[in-house]
Length: 183
Image 1 (cartoon, helix red, strand yellow):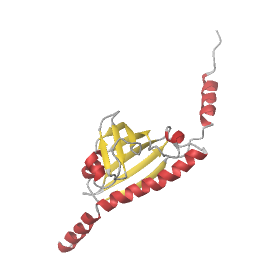
Image 2 (tube, rainbow, N blue to C red):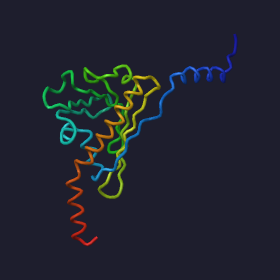
Image 3 (cartoon, rainbow, N blue to C red):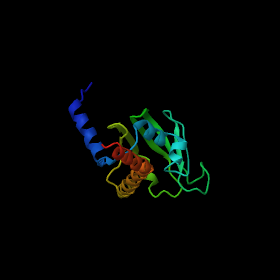
């Protein structure tokens, strides 16, 4: 029986895996003027998502559950324009990991999205503030994946801006109350 050098086998595996040239994670981050429990609710419930992001949404918050969203008001949840994400993991009010299970019918990068997943981190800050960090993973150096990465960089940034805007009226009220209290 021939003994195989473990180091050589590991090196060969790394060289083979390295040929895909995984890209750096895509990170979008924003501070939201709301407590973490409220931000979590808005990101992990159908009613919450419909209050600021999607025209139609439902969430089965469990490992293996589905998060379904439809951005256009016309049409129905479940039609071919519905985005279906599968929940991979979550820690309440801390982290949510999802993967696209079914993109909308006209999604331009169906091959690349199959190897991508997203982790959303929720970090409580000073009272009433939350840092939301969206990390996209699974991109590679292919033309399709690079184009999809650019799409998600803009889309995730816009999503965080919308979430911030959801709390702007609250933000203005808080500033008025602080000024009135002489702080």
